[in-house]
Amino acid sequence: MTWQGRVRTWQLTLLVLVLAGWELGAATGLIDPFFLPRPSAILRRVVAWAGSADVYNDLAITLTETVLAFGIGTLLGVAAGLWLALAPFAAAVADPFIKALNALPRVILAPIFALWFGLGILSKVALGVTLVAFVAFFNTYQGVKEVNPVVVANAQILGAGRGAMLRHVYLPAAATWILSSLRASIGFAVIGAVVGEYLGSAAGIGHRIAEADGLFDAVGVFAGMTVLSAFVLLLDGCVSLLERRLVTWRAPALNANQG
Amino acid sequence: MGNAMAIGGYGADRHSDTTADAVRFDGVTIGFGDFIAVRDVDLSVPPGEFLCIVGPSGCGKSTILNVITGLLKPRTGTVTLSGQTLRGLNRDVGYMLQQDGLLPWRTVLDNIALGPLFKGKPKAEARALAAPWLDKIGMAGVGERYPWQLSGGMRKRVGLAQTLIMQPRILLMDEPFSALDIHTRHLMENELLRLWEEARSTVVFITHDLEEAISLGDRVVVMAAGPASHPVASFAIDLPRPRDVAEIRLTEPFLRLHRDIWDVLRGEVMRSHTTVRA
Ligand SMILES: Nc1ncnc2c1ncn2[C@@H]1O[C@H](COP(=O)(O)OP(=O)(O)OP(=O)(O)O)[C@@H](O)[C@H]1O
Ligand SMILES: [Mg+2]
Image (cartoon, rainbow over all chains, first blue to last red; front, side, top):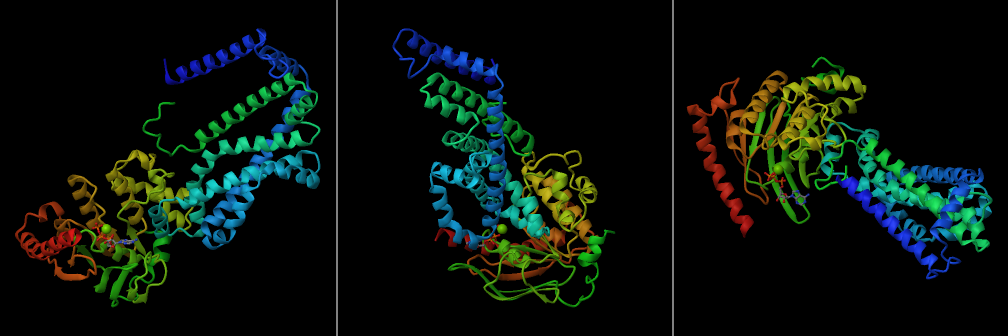
């Protein structure tokens, strides 16, 4: 069997085993379904949701927030990263502020953003941006800092001005780092959206989970989490696809077994 | 040549100051922290000369080229290029670094096209200028490969094309052929001589290989063992041109020059070994 095939087989086996054990535990009374509902009940709820329109509406809202937070955050982070990496003085000045801001737990900001931007999409996007921007920033900064100095010298000797250096040397060098951080970024964008929704909104998957929570409806909470997980896996797949399309120039690692 | 870049780049002032040395060092000292790499170097390279510099490893040969390019500032002394004091990065200088600086995200062809692209040529035009170089460096058919798909010698050859496509007035080369097999190496050396005889640029060529230095250069300068290195001897190479680098090695005048220069160089190489151990 291929590597890919073996990986998939093991993943499936593991999933089935855990779910079967869980279902069995619930059936024999070892697990109280009030706290930890049966997988079959969760699945039934998800299927029921899939038949109604509101879940798609919620998904669309969460997706919009995620994509916006991801896009805006990445743009801000990359721009700031490029700037500070190429301006050592500004970087030295900004350093403590960036560290302090990044240390701030973002959940604290959610109510403030709700106050500033209202309970709609905007406050969730803002929350996601504060998470995504830092990931993009640190990776861009690192990427530019780690460009091979010989490559930089060579490009300068060949006559590259500031703009050309940015476009042909620094940005592509940072692109690998940015792309490899996209996966983390998309996760953070989802967190921003869902946490924001959970803490105060009228729609979205986070809101759906919060509602179920309020009713002590564990099945609803778990069904929400299931939908959310599937959603994240799907986005992750999209990012992988993008990464493979964009970085064609990189050597595959010598011990890479996965196709 | 025949392109706007050549005219704007150096054509106009190429013959403007034929009397001034293309490269001139007056009392140049270069250091890194407490370490003095080269001290009190006086060196003059007349326009059109092919100068080869040999010396023990670590004596400061690359350092000297870095100063000519403006990548490195000397601690004391002045560097003049064609009569003008060097300030900042010099754009008339082509420099093939000891390690290649190919852009990993660009194909071979696009890497060769970088110079013209940076000078403002549209992408298609820059690539068209680069295309003939694939043949010249013996890499026709691999223009669409990325640097990670190349051997060490191939990367060096791309670096060479990258530099030569600029038709620089002053060409600096730091052991450009050391990674090549002997056959390719002779081909490239002959090609370099041919291009140089056409363009008559000034060349400062660094090598470990004394035979290479004699077969290419008009003059060979021997550097002392570091630290605080400086030129210790200069030999005029009066071998006839055009030369074939493989054949000239077998001639009597060549062997005589080799013996004379090696007498000096051997002493420096041995001194450099004892200093490093001490
Ligand atoms: N950035 C640096 N910082 C400190 N020391 C340096 C630096 N660059 C070079 N040196 C030192 O300066 C000396 C000259 O270095 P250089 O690279 O010019 O030698 P080289 O003659 O080109 O040697 P090789 O033939 O091995 O390439 C060496 O002793 C080296 O250790
Ligand atoms: Mg060197």
